[in-house]
Image 1 (tube, rainbow, N blue to C red):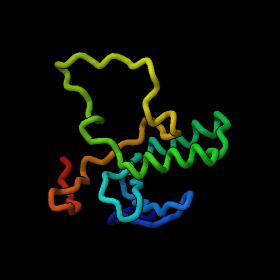
Image 2: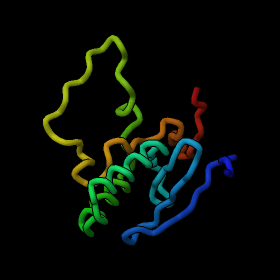
Image 3: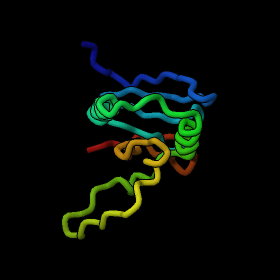
Image 4: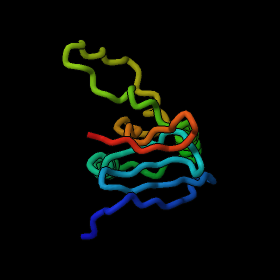
Length: 132
């Protein structure tokens, strides 16, 4: 098995939109080519789990209108990293919403997140932050 020594980025076209997929030891990041918005990220365990869950449930390819909705969400960029942080132990857990997460209706799995390690600086340049 060949290990990741650095992230590997490849471009694909989906629904007429060019996407950059970056594969790393942690998982996959997806963003539109040239975008400075936060990428969508999914870990390897979450990706494999999602693939198996979809296969077991018998999901087919998304309809064209569902794919368009997903690509529109992707172009908007991932939500802020703060929205995906776990609550502190002293704070009460948030109440469960009665409505599904906004991305679930667009076909985006709820476990897809943005990477806190990749942020855009005030100068508009992507900067790497140490995770630790």
